[in-house]
Image 1: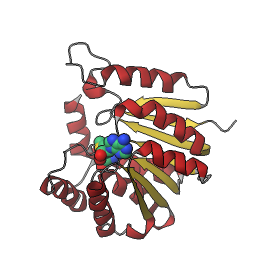
Image 2: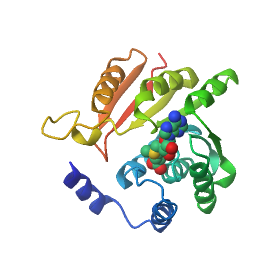
Image 3: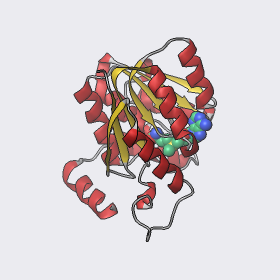
Length: 213
Ligand code: SAM
């Protein structure tokens, strides 16, 4: 799986000094190296620009790598709301988004994502694109909240759904969240309100469209 990703990256991606700086800043701040893969990041940018999404909700900001990829998709014409547990991470993400030219278009809500999501529901907020990439145990809850916050026709994308390949291949060492992901993928695949597919880029992305018919 990694060789396939390396091949795709070598053919379809070019050097990206800004995103490389983001990765370096994450390392310099002693934060974990768990941003989306470069291929998944480019795919996020393309999904946003192809769908025309303008109001994006991200769950799990880390240092802003995926945030920049999402914002690049809507350019000057959209906004990103990003939920992050750690204030230090949200501060770095804000600073990196500002360097990328999107500082005025992003809002970070810090603390438990479930609390922020409940608040967004109370405020009757609506979004047309969701990127779920935080604590895996809550993926199903994040999916349920996304559906409550979604405009008809919205997209919901979730990272790490292959759990390093362990969801599909018994010879791969299972991860802590392998079973959670298997269950999550099944839920997404069978959900009556969603049309979905799993794309094997990076650590695997589910891409769902909220049905509007
Ligand atoms: N999306 C980021 C990117 O690709 O640049 C990477 C996100 S990283 C995989 C997961 C993030 O979720 C971490 O920054 C972590 O602090 C955050 N997180 C974990 N549990 C959380 C929770 N309960 N509520 C909000 N954020 C949480």
